Length: 193
Image (cartoon, rainbow, N blue to C red; front, side, top):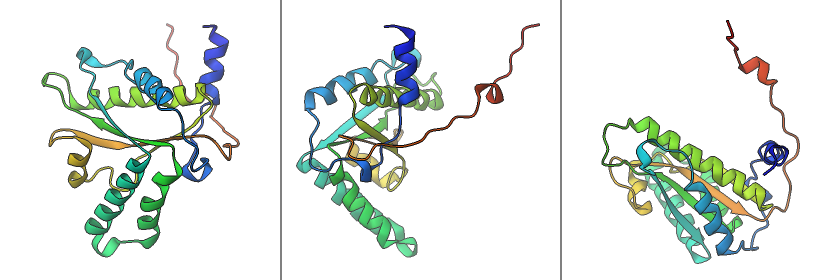
């Protein structure tokens, strides 16, 4: 691969929010599998591969929507917001696929938990770059039920594991516009003496 192609891929990556996706237009499951294989090539300490994905599509999207909106309603108490509840019910149905992003702790307790979380974050970056390469939209959300202990079992996660959010994938109906990054010089120190 020519470096310019990779530079263009990285610099053209954008988040595509659920309202920007073309509801009802499905991405081929074989493409989703390729995207997940790419995610699995992320760097990780000790070759532990701590990521755990659950893919929702078709009627599975309704199952996810019902689970997360009902759990939110159950746990929110006086902080309940109808708008949040409705988004949790409706947003998954706007995507072709929603992938839960889990971090499963490995048997190797010499690896700090943060390094497993970092490895999963690298896997998510591979998801982002892959959907960009396929001309699809993607979005990593950590809202709703993401950090609720009560949610983990639904996604095949245990007590020591973490639910780190959801990755939405679909065909783009409304492209993201405008992107800005500060000059890298503002974020970098060079020490060469």
